[in-house]
Image 1 (spheres, helix red, strand yellow):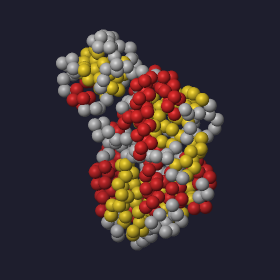
Image 2 (cartoon, helix red, strand yellow):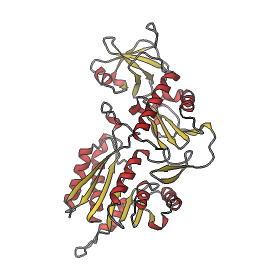
Image 3 (cartoon, helix red, strand yellow):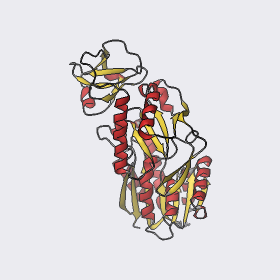
Image 4 (cartoon, helix red, strand yellow):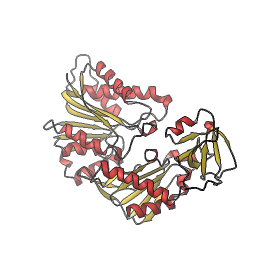
Length: 407
């Protein structure tokens, strides 16, 4: 515990700003700061109090960021190695509870695990570290030491090449922090083997937040013998290969990235599924439009028993939500026209700014225009290694549905 006579710099909060922090949200924006009691070095620990001097917590300060303080604890405690070990062990226990047997998962998910600015992914015996705040970035050696003590990985890599780091005044860097790593790492998800480039690949390797959904969608596709499946925005094949493994007769994977599809093809071969998969590098919007455009007297024959839509986020800002909704409606309208009666649509949205109700409304609007009636058969969310804290709305971003086309 910090001494009651601690001389930590104090950040005083403007009236009306404290309630959100007391409720559990860790972000204090620059506009919420009333004043500092003394000069602070960016990245240092500060204590936060309301305008009446009531203690709210401790966290990292950064004058270069719109998030002036990221609170890490409501208690007067040092943010030292023992603190990080407690938090990381608690996060790991949560994963072992809800994802027993998983060997690749997100160990720490920033705000979801009360460690704002820190992400740690595990791929087999290799860890990938991301620090998106200055305070966390300055403590990488300490955090790496704790991770080695808790998880004993053979290597820890750093993938700090996200554009968001510039808002904290941080450069984009990546490389090896500890241990040795030569070449790709082979991991297993839902019984499928994947090769992951943790030093040069996309993001931190795979979309681990969809790990559970890959299996759930595959289980739904399994209900249709010899299904013809279209996997849109396939990336490296998580959904498509799971569908093939579940018994689909054929899966056609679409993605704009040639590199991602080359990796997906390699994964299909490694899992003995190449004979049931085909791959096409294309703009998915253009592809869907071309397959659904017909003349006035031409009839469209729907070829697919199941279609998976898992696009990247269409908006990262609230101001662009309108354009995003138009994009979501367009792909759903086209996809529904390509589904047979009784066919399955599994669809996802990963934008925090589009909530689940709005996303479903867009799908139903597209169904109306396509003259299709839908039965909802499943609701999806992010895998449990990406926990949702309702007090922090930003932790809930991934939502999805599965629908059957009645007619």
